[in-house]
Length: 56
Image (tube, rainbow, N blue to C red):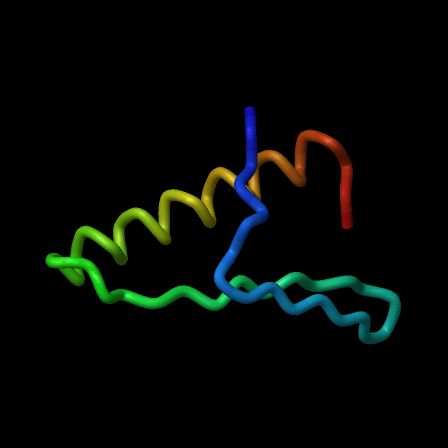
């Protein structure tokens, strides 16, 4: 699986021993709902991939 880390803007932070990454998305396409569904699908894929590699 290839994860596109070429986000418009990526933010990483650490708090209480946990690392978080935030990808800022914009919904400027012709269909806001379609853009939203794509973002949710990416989130699910990212979460699954991180669980598989045992990443925090």
